[in-house]
Length: 263
Image (cartoon, rainbow, N blue to C red; front, side, top):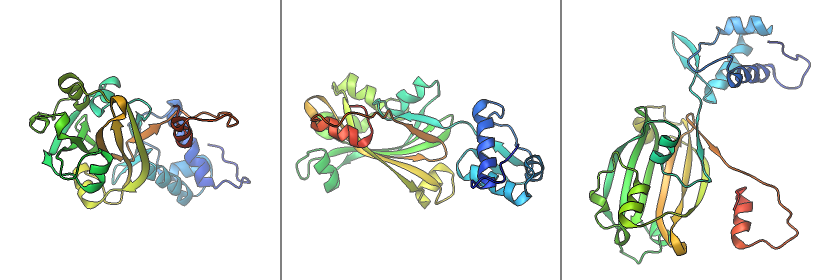
């Protein structure tokens, strides 16, 4: 573990990147235990405190996990959410070869809050189906989603068993509603006490908030969604491109380009 001691890059950061490279190359595998901080310091010819700083940095990044009294271990790689393909959680987990389950926390007819009424282009007081689910894979809670759909488009949906079904598949097969595109935003956030209890994590842990509206044919809004993803278990994948701005862009292209998305 040769570090460049004359580089302006901090030694702890250099060591952290070397450990990350070992993980990415497969030299260190998920579940492998890291050497002690003292041994890391000796190998890199740095202080134990600097080695500890490198390990703490990777723990905060979700690359390593520290188990008190046991040691520090390489975590499973983060799941990649492809934001450009409109897949439900169940569909995406199946596509990756993972088991997907849901714990339904709320499923009922409601009068949605005014912002949701506006996004779904509903009339004031028009009902919507509200669905709140904790989504799990391999019995590990990964995201908490809240969804509103116009009740008139999916009568009886509030009574469906959504614990093991794909909502998107159900909407297509039973109600003839095909979700064709979505406008969504991403932002970093932290887990509040309620979310921390659901996920079994520490309040204030890093999370990713995904929020938006999905549309069907003729641009009709079909679903408002808000999903809180565990920041230590997910990363998001986007295709970006550089284009010649000398020609006129359509409205859709301008929005897509601003987001770094391929239209």
